[in-house]
Image 1 (cartoon, rainbow, N blue to C red):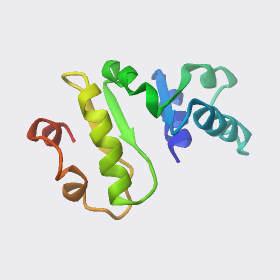
Image 2: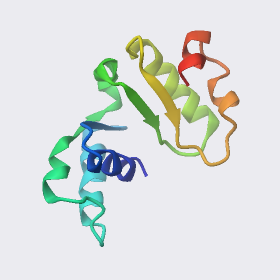
Image 3: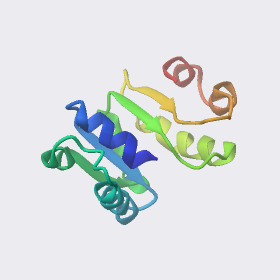
Image 4: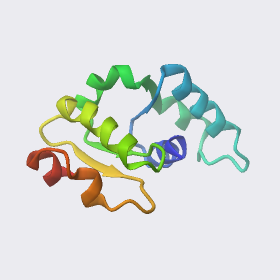
Length: 119
């Protein structure tokens, strides 16, 4: 799901950094995105605007304007990732979730008020 979201944002002309558990997993997600038919990328060059990184490189998130969390639908997993991400956010970074059923208030609950205002 994360790679497809990254692809749609790249289609809109935005530079994207796709994170996953490891850099290799992120690169694999990007490869799977490119293999989907019909191709979700509007132009072959769009894929070049999507970078990949692992969760060990969350400091790179400090330059992001918008972060979309799209990990597995498990509250504890989402909260743990956002706890690791929070100290790496830029002052104006917006954070959102691709959750389909977990209340956003539950995801944001253990985080600071500053984080909750941008979530």
